[in-house]
Length: 532
Ligand code: GLY
Image (tube, rainbow, N blue to C red; front, top):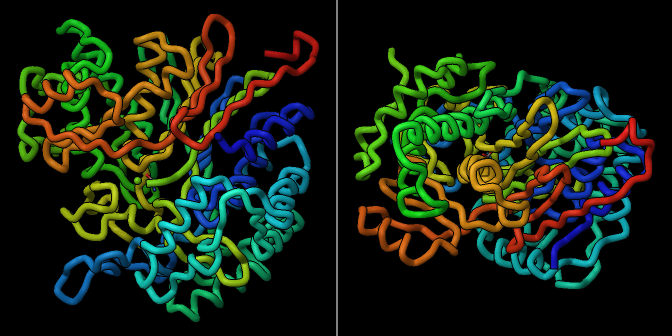
């Protein structure tokens, strides 16, 4: 049974005349209550907005605290200390979600802020019936995280969840009331900030009241690229997602210019896109990081000549040797996503995260919300992979106030200025594959929304060597052919893809069937000239 807490609240906001941004803000706060493994006020994310023919990209990614330092996860011998960037208070960046929602509201919201936060307050105070998968997941996580760091207190808050029973979160409700009544000051200053900073001091964490007061969500230029007759608009750095999605789509087309199109999810198709993925992830590891700290060569990485040069390196007959793939320029698993289109044709694609499921396993005592373990998305040491197997170097090393590199790729695809696809997914580095494949499924293979999200997907990220990760569902012959080529297959699932697609003049919405998400398409009476 899918959970529809946030979809229901978003639908109510839309039905009562709110726009897509209003609905997104309300959904984000509800997810902080009903989806504790990923929905959050203790994490961050990216919101991509298409409104009145313009696109806006909001970066509310977490930020390293002032006392963070490059080698903070290394021991005296220079080795990475296991789990320190994943569990406990040192794993958390300064949360960005509340500032992000506030910025989105200030610029594009139409309904009163308090009205949008209120549904979350009610769900936290009054409780909600715990879905069985959440109860199972929380109890497994409570066992897994026990003893990982002295500050981990997850079990005390979430360990006793029972399927079907009402789960109330009074501390979280009080925090949400402060946010409802005071806006961002209800989180970044005053009582909530004091609770967070006191908790951090007590547990030898780094986040201070000054760090919280200094946090800023930022409007940035989105990645915009022309691909075929479409405009792909996606996440800019500090996400790697938009650059990677566009590189993947463009290199695919370059390869097709000289080769026949392989059948969907055939071994030839997977191999071609795995070859592209190797190049995409070599570039990601070398060049991508927070643009406020590192000069990310965005234009160079997306230039047609560069894409053509990289596509020329693809070997469609055999696997290119992994160590030979170098960055090309000369010189995550949890998270959650929602897509919304309103009656005026405005769209929001929003991906938000506390990094791995239930984040750091630390609940701010007295404030009732889980803190992220996003610091693991930094590169703790060159050549040492993070939890998603991703490598990095100087571009993504830890520095005070820096944002860690992300793979979140909220994306909107337009044709002639109108929304064609709104897509996004959780899943760490596999997010990028889910997103570009959802676009190919829609555009190249003409699938309906449900098929787009339910078709088996796959992912290759250069390292580990020659491993293709895939959703179970790839047919046995394709798997055998890939293994014969030398690929190793990893069948860990991907995150839940959430898509809205326009087909034959109608909007279709779909949430991956195997996941916990829900979709809703509502009819709104309105004069034709004001409607989609
Ligand atoms: N924490 C997963 C990501 O941002 O890519």
